[in-house]
Image (cartoon, rainbow, N blue to C red):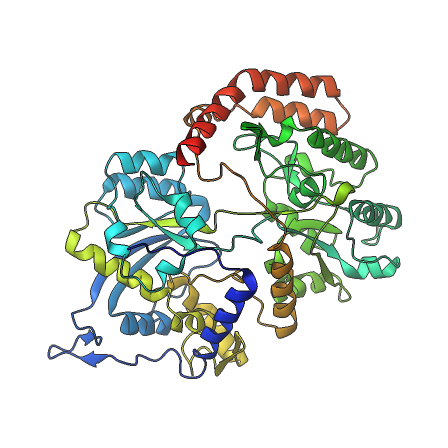
Amino acid sequence: MNFTRKLVPLMASAALMATALAGCSGNNNSAAGSTASPDGSTQTETGGKPASIKAMTILFGNPPEMGSNKALEDLEKRGNVDLDVTFVPSEAYTDKLSVAVSAGDSYDLLLMDGGKDDKFNNLVKMGAFHDLTPYLEKTENISQIDDVVWDGIRIDGKVYGVPRPRGLYGGGEANILIRKDWLDKYNLAVPKTMDELTNALAAFKENDPAGGGKTIPFTIYGSDGVNSPGPFSGVLPIQFAFGIPNVWKLDGGNAVRDFQTPEYKAFLEWLRDSWSKGLIDKDAPVLKNQGQARSKFLSGTAGAFVGNVSDLGEANVEKLKQTDPNAEIAIVDVLEGAGGHKGAAVLGGYYGLWVIPSSVPEDKVQQIVDFLDFTASEENIAFSKAGVTGIHSSDFKDGVAVQTEEQKKQYDLDKPSQFVLENRVDPYVYASSKEPEILAQQKATLDIISKIGVENPFLSYNSQFASKNPDSYKKMSAVMTKYVLGEGTWEDVQKEIDTWTNGAGGQIAKELLDQYNAAH
C-alpha cells in the first residue's frame, strides 16, 4: 500500500481544509467515544488501556503550565494515552537531543529537529531507530502528507521518521515586511519591483521617519558561511528577483550553485550600492539571526525586513504600536526584478522528524504511530487553536477561536497546541492570526506565492564532503562581505568562487548529482 498522495493545488487543499474546520466547530474537542474500564482507566472505542508515551520536543518561547493542565488532560482522554512531554528550549535542544539519542532508552519518541541531515542518516545506518514503513500503512492523517515530503525523507526506500508537516511555501524568508505607515507618509505604494523597493528604502533613509537619525531602512543579518555562503541572510525575495536559483539548479546535466551564476554578481552589486547609500542596517554583519533583525523592525527603528505571513500577527502589530501608535505593517507578496524574475523557495514541507528509538518494544511502536496520527486529526485542528470548549474558548468559527480575556489567559498558560505533536497537513499553516481580516490577508499571500515556487533539485540530498568540511564556505562569505562593504574587489570574490569550484565545490556537486541521478 502506498501511503502518500500527490501534491494538491493550494486552493483545492483550502477547500478541503475549510470543510474539515466546519466539522470541527462547536463541541469539537470533547472526549466522545470514550468509556471507563472496570479498573477505572479510560478506554476508547478501539479498546485497550492508555498507552504510556514519553516524548521530547523542541520549545520556542515559554512552556505550558504543567500543573493540572486541562488541555493535556483532554488530549490524553481523547487519545487514550498517558503523555509525558519534555519541552526543551531551542538553544539547548541540540545537546539534550544528543544525550537522549545516546542513552537510547530514555524516550519513546524524539523529535530530530534537523530533519534528514547527515546526523540522521548516520544514526539510521547504526540502527538507532525503528523502520516505521509498515506502521504507517493504516494511518488516516499522516498518510495525507504530500509525496514530495515523503520522497525527501526516505532512506533506501524506507521511512525512519514521521515528518511534522509545514507549508511547502511561505517559510522563514518568504516575504518582505515593510512599514506601510511610512510608505503612506511619503505617498509611496507597497513595492512590487526591485526599483520600487530601492526607492522606498532611499525615502526612509532621506526622511528619517523613526526620528533622531535612528532610521534603519532595511535590516538583515550576517551569514555564518557554514551551510551557505554570501554576506547576508534575510534576502531571499531579493535574490529571486535577480533570478538567482534556490541554492542549486541543473543546467545541461550539471549542478550549478547560486553564487556561480552571473545573476549573483548583480545581486552583490545591489547590496554593495545599497550599503554605500546607508540603506542597509550597519549592524547587519554582526547580527546573528532573523530574530535579531525582527526585533529591530518591531522596535520601530527599521523600515523593512524579511519574514513570512506569520509576522503579520496581531502580537507583532501590538508590539510595534507600543513604540508608534500609528504603525502599520504591509507585506510584499511578490517582489519582481528585471526580466520578470521572482520567486519563493519551495521548502521540504516539514520541520523535524518524529523517530522511535529501536529500544522501544515493537508492540508499542504502532500505539505511538497511532497517537501521532490522532494528533493530526481534524478534531485537533480546533483543539490546537481553541483548546477545550468552556475553558480556553467559547466557540471556534471560521478557523478562529472565540475567547474571553480570561479564556485567552488560560489558553496562553495551558498552550494546547504544544501537545499536538503531529500537526495536520495545512497549506495555511503559517496563517495563524486570530483576527479574521489579518487571517484572510495571510491566506491570500500564501495563495499568491504558491504559484511562484522555486525548487532546489538537491533539497533532499546530502553531501558527506560538505558535512565533514563545514568551513568550506566561510572564506567565501568573508570575501563577499568585504566586497559589499566596499573593502574588496570583485576580482577577490571571483578568485574565491573559482577556488571553491575547482576544489570543494566540485566534490560537493558530484556527490549531490550522483544521488540525484540515482533517484531519477
